[in-house]
Image (cartoon, helix red, strand yellow):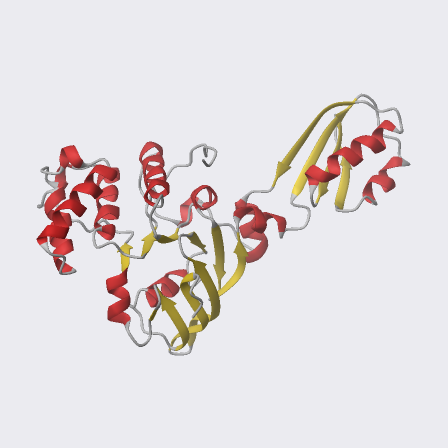
Length: 332
């Protein structure tokens, strides 16, 4: 096993009868990484995570999580990981503190270790003032924060999150995002995040795996995934005059240019590496004494990348309702 990896998978397969849900997946997740898993319904992403967490037995292949062989020691794996499921499972008739305490007892944490750890986590998730309140009085966002704290109470090395912001309002989603980014600071914590929200994956994840038909069809940082799609940049220029017909083939011939089309204001260029290409386009236009009134560079979205690799769209309606979109802030 690679000592730099918190999760390592080789030719992992899961079959249910004649159906292959996961098909020879190869994957490495580095220590401290926040890793995203995206895929349409039925793609195999949930089965993959369930194998890695020791819930579903592996048909063939190898997998290590937190340095432990999942096939041979699934019980040891479960002791080394935290799992926060999509469903809210905290006990409504217990207080926030009691929920964390009883979960810590499941992992045989001694009282001397439980108390300071629970207090630390309740402070970090912003629930210290509500530690004695019954969970039934909590909002959905508060319950989700509590369950993330519960998944961390035994100090796992890897945290698996399944749709952590499903059903939350925009403000609560942002609170969860900030919490996840904060929890990684100064901690040897690796996070595996399964999500339907493309904006969430792009904002939070260091790298993203797109899973389809049981295989990883694309893997990389959000920017790397975008660069894998031909013509991933669009350059639009508003010109002070019409572009001569003779100039069109010359622009088409520039390295990285995929398509050039006229617009009401000037031209639109689809290209690879649009930022580097823009000065060359402007220089070519100046040869025709054409001034540029304005220039805009835009990149394709992660949704476009997803469609490119899977042939279908992954939209909010594929997940349970209640997770409205909102403007994504710049990542810190």
